[in-house]
Image (cartoon, rainbow, N blue to C red; front, side):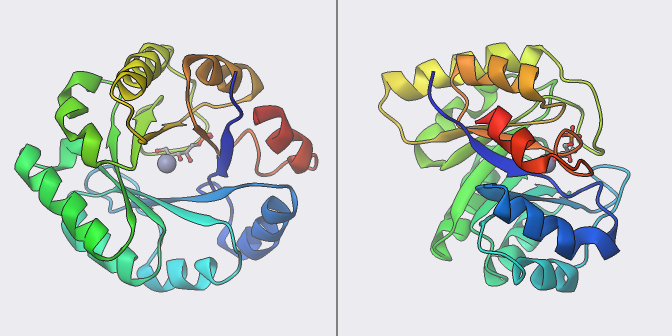
Length: 218
Ligand code: DX5
Ligand code: ZN
């Protein structure tokens, strides 16, 4: 089984605690910092302002992994590309068709950034197959997007296996990332199916043994 990269999500961290948490995550060996952007429309909650993101991104050297849960992905993708995000992922459910998705991916690439597409639990992985050759990453949601601390949905495992097979068959370099309800047990199950990046919020942040928890996912 290959090793996974770990991408802690700071969604549930109090804003005042973010700098200290980020320092601990970086020291603990986290590879990516997963940043959940919500507009209050695509999902009911709202998260950070662009200024807050900029401030947070200056605090570390981990890979900036931005997950856009917004109804206007193009607008947000451009802004986050300008703000230096490394990976910018938007939801397939937020665009009207494949052409709109291709356009957003091309815009992200024009900034020299990596582009990802995310699928919600109810979306079949088949939907994004035609896009795989141009994608750097696919983010499989293993909970309904919107909040941390939810239970992992096993349906994500088949999706990972399905996409992994396709990526191998066609010798693509697309990374597979999973997000929601990840802990040592669900994380291992995802790794067995071929996932590359594990996003984890409540399993990691807010605990003293943060490094051990990061290690347990790798
Ligand atoms: C949910 C977010 C996740 C969330 C994961 O919409 O995309 O990144 O923070 O949190 P846990 O790991 O607690 O499910
Ligand atoms: Zn996320």
